Image (tube, rainbow, N blue to C red; front, side, top):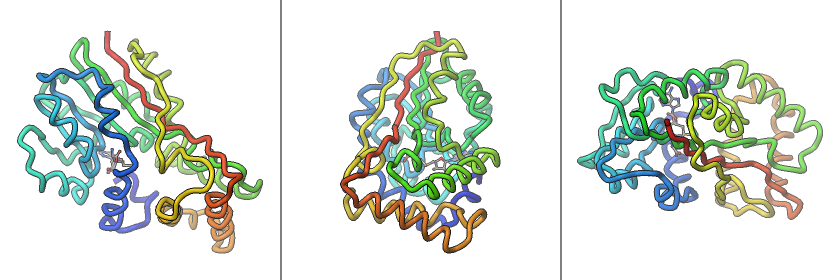
Length: 262
Ligand SMILES: C[S@@+](CC[C@H](N)C(=O)[O-])C[C@H]1O[C@@H](n2cnc3c(N)ncnc32)[C@H](O)[C@@H]1O
């Protein structure tokens, strides 16, 4: 799986982390912004633990929930929801879906396809009915959005982010790229807004629980491919102490874009 190079932890603890993150997502607010009708078939791409798919399933006829990670899909499978079809598949090409669909929802997944985002969004677009839509939630500036960090930390994070992007592993600034790509596909942008998310976009002093999640996230990043142990400790210490500072200003964005095929 693409993110195994990027994430060093075992799948089991990633599962716990992803489950834990769900409390900070405002899925009920988000689902109400989607242009859905009760007879729609909607695919959720990179559904992870399926928390959103479950909420969506109450509003539409069928949800096709797709992810590569079987460990995460198990959580949704165990809920045995009648109108959710679960597929353990790669979301970069949807040719295995036998029909055209009304909508595609994807949160925090397109960033795993740096340098291929145009092609992949085109593949998703091709799977839509004529007036179908794509809704994407994606992060922008997950790491360097936090200011002020030291010059040394910022330089190292820039090196790390460039390598992750060049290696086709992750684009930390994917959020800003989505709307222009969807427009280039001839789609009409119905919504383009920044979501508030207490885990990802808060400034000021961050709660202990969220700091622990950040510590885990930093531990998952493969800094050791590029930096010595003491350099990694310095990055982590700079970042984590900023999260406990009143000077902490977070410029990370969580972009929410809905576009219609017309
Ligand atoms: C950061 S998680 C987001 C999960 C969920 N959408 C959420 O917002 O909580 C990214 C998800 O994308 C999945 N993913 C990454 N690359 C994938 C691929 N090529 N095919 C299918 N799923 C993929 C991962 O397994 C993971 O569940």
